[in-house]
Image (cartoon, rainbow, N blue to C red; front, top):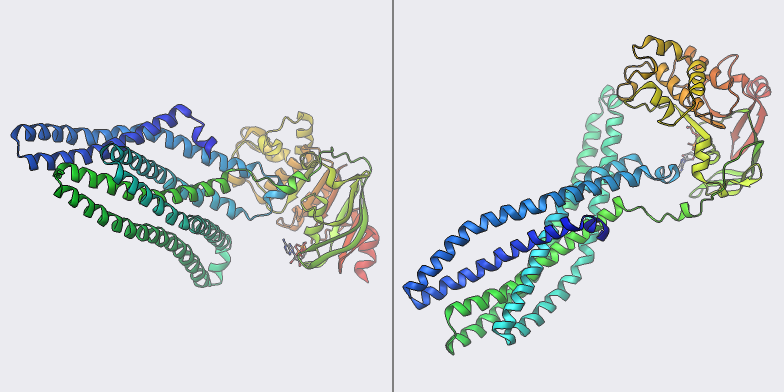
Length: 549
Ligand SMILES: Nc1ncnc2c1ncn2[C@@H]1O[C@H](COP(=O)(O)OP(=O)(O)OP(=O)(O)O)[C@@H](O)[C@H]1O
């Protein structure tokens, strides 16, 4: 947080000066009020004139001061919020795939929208109020020491007592803000899930049920907000009651002093100084707690975590010349064992099809082979090197993924294939050709430079899938992981596409529910998952015998 605030030192100093301008304004207001009362008490015309002139100057100065102060602060606040947004975005984008997949994408969206909005709405207003309150406290203390040191000592002691009391509330206040942030995450996840399935909900006339769920979710968010606000008010009021009691004692003390000859103006000023010492301190606590709560949100969304898992990741290069060996591998989710003592081998250049009933663990196995999960027992080795010793970056540079859902972005077909990497033209041409994209490209006015609209909406499903396969092929990766890569396509197109990656030189590890006559049986091996065991069959045997048994 310190680094964030001090990133633009000169602008931060400007921000502090602008805050001091507020403090001067508050203090001038107190002095002016005491002067007016003093003038009334004296009843002197000359004094009246002098006070009237000062009042007129103040009436002009005060709004101007406010305006200048705001102008001085605004640029710094805008730039800092922008930094928070960038840092939060960078934190997510720089996560390794393994770290990223530990949370749902809706949580990241909530961090980027809800949490940043909370930070934006609360941090600077709380910081400003805190600085003003603390500034006024110290300025009043200095003036009080100068005018009546005994009263200053009493007020310092009572302020310390209030400070101790307020500290009591800090922890709870911060935890309430964090709870609100988590409830917001759940709410965003729920709403996103509902919108993802809106077509099904509408077709089945069950949107009311989900509306009810959404209402409950909104209710939870509002309750958390309410709890945070009520607590903040409670804290403010409990301390305020004690402050009022202190002020009653100050009044007694001042009325005694007035009996001994103290003027009304001085007494008023002393009373204002004493009350501002306790009142500004009281207001400082909730604003400080609010600042701390905002800081903890900032830490959560923008500061990269010291990820223990990533520290344990290896730094060896991924070199795959002959084989990947899975030896006595056991893997469980919590208490549910998915694989028990599984051993098999993946040979370079061969094509593997993972089969098994729903829930057998096909995606889990792919995630294990793709280094997404590493909390398994046993060993996975590539050419004798333990997977856990291999750098995730090096692994990802050498493998490619084809999923059922295709991700395309608003840019040229070329950039969608190369992902902005400097790939040799011959690899791009080859990928375009083997995926049958050349016909698509020659139809476009700008050829391969044709711009796609958002997620390739100006292409058919098959064309989009071909681009995603071309992307994987142009990367010239050693292993191609294909998870239901053709299931969203029609039978004919699916067959054609499956044929494309079965003809490549790369090692292919695929999951597919489809069986394409004359194509699927061209896989080299089938890895069949059954009751936690992994059986490896030559594909021809599997499709000829196992499946017909
Ligand atoms: N993150 C997870 N936490 C806990 N259990 C999980 C998790 N992911 C999957 N499982 C469970 O592990 C089992 C295997 O899941 P997996 O997705 O690997 O199966 P699958 O064979 O790919 O299924 P499908 O063909 O239906 O996609 C399932 O019973 C599933 O409920």
